[in-house]
Amino acid sequence: MHVIILGSAAGGGVPQWNCRCPNCIDARHDARGRTQSSVAVSADGERWVLLNASPDLRMQLAAHHQLWPRSLRGSPIASVVLTDAEIDHTLGLLLLRESTARLPVYAPGGVTALLGNEWPLYRVLSSYAGVEPRTLAEGRPVALTDGAGDPLGICCSATAVARRPPRYARAAPTQAFDVGLRLTDEHTGGTLAYIPTAGALDDAVRRVVEGADLLLFDGTFWSDDELAAAGGGADAPTARQMGHLPVGGPGGSLELLPRLDAKRVVLVHINNTNPILCRSSVERARVEGAGIVVGEDAMEFEL
Ligand code: MLT
Ligand code: MN
Ligand code: ZN
Image (cartoon, rainbow, N blue to C red; front, side, top):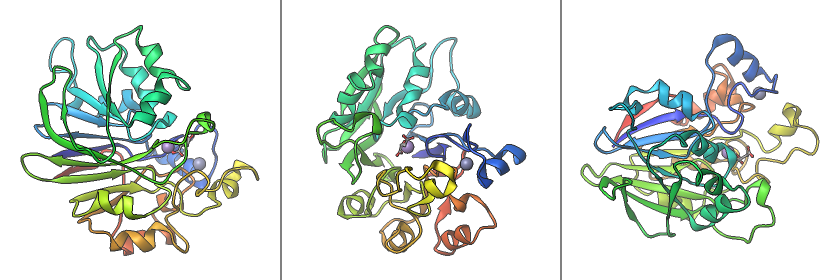
């Protein structure tokens, strides 16, 4: 399975338009910005599956020749899988509206419901090419297919992870909004565990990760109070209130990730305030010292 990290940043990207934190200042000056969270995977190198649809999708598709059209009109994007209904993981669907055919979008049932109502992307898109919502049932693996129903050679199973509903849907009924994905190449057996958002490193996460060749895990924040400390205001939510397990501190993911059964661990969905983005920081050294990689845009893997 071919894996490309299209975007390694959390919502807002790096630099974030209204932020003057040290990481955002650096990114403005050294042109090493990061786009918002998304990954592309493919078994055959021809047809690709987007894992989440980033607000930066247009730039991301332009940056990778594997994702360029092969004919006068068309796209190697065969389907999309959503892990949640957050704006940074779904807004990119609007950017695919010029499609000539309905786009298959796999998502947990709770996410599909939100995108039909509270954040009515599917309703808006129905006046354009439209999407074909496909449900990812908890713990039931599906063989991903393209719009014509042809198999893509990748099996996908979704497991609900500890989180909370998106901010725009606080009143929504409690359901599985966020999932971790386990994607297996049906030919090579290569397995990717993709968990860009998780409030805990618990048994659900362990089930997704078990024996994976690569784990892409939630690296949003280093510390619980990071947003408030970076000028987000005294009312800024903590990492844990947002449903992101911090990387650092007691009980943080840095203590727990090396004990998981994954061959490689790469952090993704990294917020612009996170000190691990600074190559000379002590936090970065601690992550790398634990054998964990800080994800970057355009990193590629073969599983
Ligand atoms: C998250 O990952 O917690 C959300 O994307 C935050 C946001 O609303 O940007
Ligand atoms: Mn996010
Ligand atoms: Zn910043």
